[in-house]
Image (cartoon, rainbow, N blue to C red; front, side, top):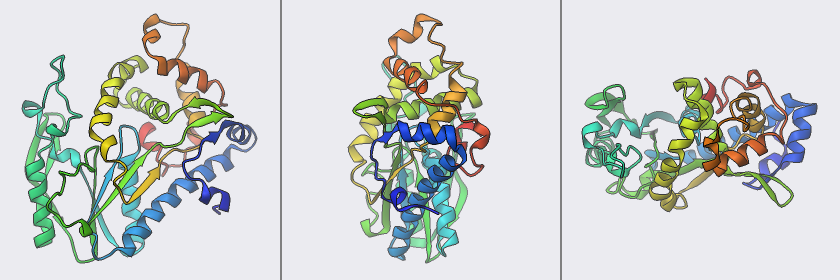
Length: 316
């Protein structure tokens, strides 16, 4: 059962004392309550969509790297379907232009975080067709070959259906600029809570996302934390340019912080973040803060993470 205190939590700083105490004494309850609050937010978004049907046809869900936006989109889809609203999810990544068309960073590497990497004209054409005709052929993107394949994904929208599109550029006002605003719901989902001890910031939202990304990169790409760190500032710069200007012009905001997750990252990252190791870490202040912050939390084994948790996006 979700408590009144849990429902009223609203992006407030998370005092680590209570989390540490519960992680040590009753980790199962900590996990349950943390997961309940996240799912409550998903259901709140569902209620807002339902209240505005049949006007809403498109839900644009944006979040920065490691925010859990993909999982959130699919959780929202399931909640909508369970409440009588037809819903499908598509990724904005399918509208990438492809390697030959990406803008370049100063060092010559392709800038896949750039809005100019998107096939905006085709995206707007596809969604305009969906609104007018109720069906359209959307592209898919092959990441192995970095190639967009047009007309390979059939999407049909009935009168009581919505299409959820998730992506880092979903809130850019140039996206669906010709679609009536009454037909669009915008959601911003990200880690929005910081972990504190009194007035001291122990871990800030960017730290949580960086830890998520380090875990995911290591798990699925076999990247060491240092490899993730080296690209992190470019990721943040892309967010400052492409997401932050638009994140307040939305209909609903979600905090995807999972209160117990730092305890899990402690158990998974501590051995990899041995600060007695190479001096390469000296150039990354965030890693110093993360290493010290992790030591403030007890470990919770990843086996306690529910199979339907948002955190599974990062550990499988």
